[in-house]
Length: 187
View 1 (cartoon, rainbow, N blue to C red):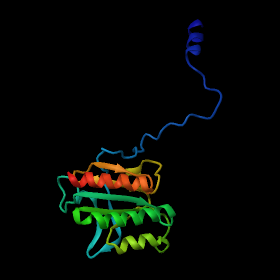
View 2: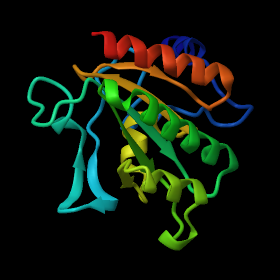
View 3: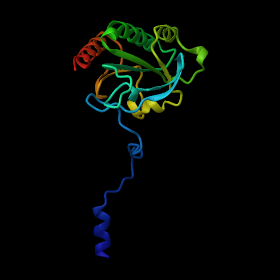
View 4: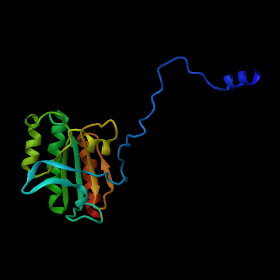
């Protein structure tokens, strides 16, 4: 009896308060600078010629068949005012650094139909930047974790390492992205 009483006292009871929230063991964490870029592949929303699928692995890493010196990967939902600004920044950076080997891809994580896409997306499509559809947010969760914060641009170097991630496209974020692009292109 004494042993039972001691065992009960040794266990801390939890009677008050909300239940403890435990992290989802199956959810990947968000990608950080220095991490290897997760896979990014799928159907293009704006196919150019015969290219209907996109695969980041074809452009980065030792097995790249169409190597890029650096990649700018931008996740966004269409119709978001901040995201429209991000797309203009992506288009500007892609045009500015494209001749030096930077390539860009936009990942559309929206759930609305194709006709409701923002005007900025149309501008990006007109710039020849591939737009990868991610309606189920599978790609976004690989890169951004279980609770994606959008918009989210990433810079990835030729070896497939993430160099920088910006949570928005304010002046500080653009400066950070430019520095990361310069660093990735210098390798």
